[in-house]
Image (cartoon, rainbow, N blue to C red; front, side, top):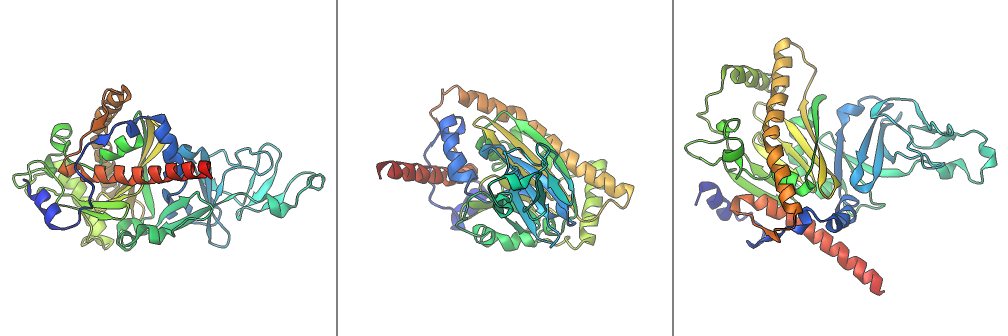
Length: 398
């Protein structure tokens, strides 16, 4: 038994998730995906951006949330308040904003020129006196939006059962101590993958595949003390989970790696994050968001469902301040390229796994001890799906 599994058992942190097989259908079945739409993605806090994108009044971003057929407009108002709206003109339903973001004083629908303020209120509409409604009733449909550690979350329910801070629990304070809370800029890598969102997400919750898929790029994550590169600790926080990544202190970087990561650490230390206490922690926030706490390669990863068998991933590498030298620019770009290249090694096997599951040949899948985060995610998803199904059945009987 490896050291990590002993710590798992000794730490008393493992919820009772069982050890049996997991049904395979939820990883490809369109009917199950439809239940996830309503039970999870319409009801959970979803991470969609960062406040550094909306630094000034008038800044806005548009986020596609295909899993619920929505487009969300997020705006920094003149009063300094952040607001989110469904990106839909209240006249005939045309999407109001066609681009992905920018700065504006107002938003005008290209169809009939209905114009809305940054607060979502209807300001003007041609020949409005011939309508049978008041302007006050035509404001943009608002979406709940809250921020923690600079990260923007939305909730699509009319009345969320929890505030964002209550939803995150003790992790909120840990996130606010991280570099992302002070980030002023980021680099982004977006990809689409032919895989169910849980299958894609699970790849980043386990290191069981590390020595097979990342035998070259992951060399620094294994060593004599930990030949399989398993995390040193797992912890569970309600629907969320964390793992502490192990890295080999004896690993010898290449000259380019030594220069790039050395520069990145130097810049991070200058910003006060050289002693960041969660520098090796991976935060997995339910349902679909990761944040890795390294001050030198501080990144988030969101896996957004599109269909039962297709997803979009967004990697973001966060920094404080703009590039102030060629060395800093190189270090940041190198960190991004390394992250992208490692992920590229995963994509083919994830998609291969999806193709295999789509056949229906497997009725169950199996998780081992060091895939416990994958098991935990499935239990959290399925508990919500089953509760939602029960509510539908109860409503049908009423």
